[in-house]
Length: 415
Ligand code: GLU
Picture 1 (cartoon, rainbow, N blue to C red):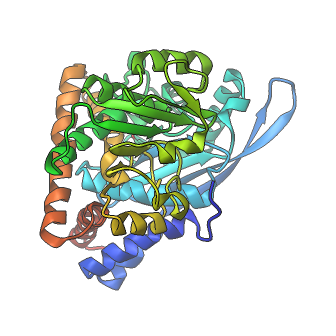
Picture 2: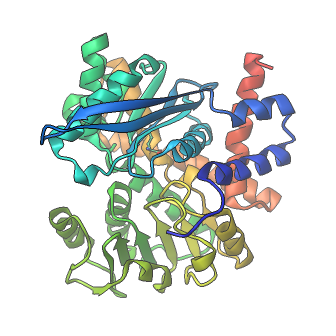
């Protein structure tokens, strides 16, 4: 990981400040949009399997709820500290506004490496965390979801723990297992939404979808579902990287076989259907589209000058530093921004929440259709604004999101 002088919050703030300037937002509104409305830091003492007690640190940052209840994932990662969670919480506010779903923005996290804990330990940490933040949560208050290091099982534990205190209420979290009120299509939704955005953008940019060469950095929930669906759409996944290495095949990887391999070995490294390379080699693979689908700060000034792609699709949250963003712009490489590209996850979370409130469930087909409608509408609004103003896709997306939140503040008569 590159050494950074600024914090994640400062990076994200920079992008907001530029939007506020372009929009000419009044100072009072700016202040309300910068500071998180509420945040909580909790110590989580947990009995480990060997009898020791460990204390983990957790957070829930509620950035803004002017357009609806707080909404956002819970991340389990050693770097899920205050700074990162705050930055990601504000991105959720712009994302839900851009997708035009009736939520605000929040994020939670626990500083831990989930791979070093047993299933039983993760269950206990999750329950302790849920108990510690339960007074902030509620179906009309704050609705967590999975993020990096968490999944449907984590949400099932959260729902169960919350239910023990407040009564059965599945709409308090989204991204649950389908058997417990989760939505069909939620697990694949972020990857699917990213494919929908990419397909529209390629058409607009005059790029061929079938046979397009795609390099994917990260093969967790988002990267693997993106690769599977892009492969089904006839794109060629020419390289996939994770923390342990990368596999490359200029003719296109056999993605279903790679997915099975990765599920079994918990890495793509060692897959025999391509050449095995180092993790960082993903940044020099010849491709049409580069898809960062892992951590923050993947694209930096160290690799942005030489990245051999024609288009960047930000499936991860905040994967491009402001310097790399500027370099890619100078090189004429469009960047489709995170708050648009990975908005499919929270969009289907919204469908899950509405299904739970109505005690009715939709077919996967309907979920995917509605997702397509919403994310393509958001893409079209961003592309139109970018075309009309000469702004980058990120600038256009930020302006639309921030303007909607600012308008809601004005309508509510806060300031
Ligand atoms: N963690 C996902 C995100 O960053 C999903 C959030 C949600 O569904 O609330 O967008």
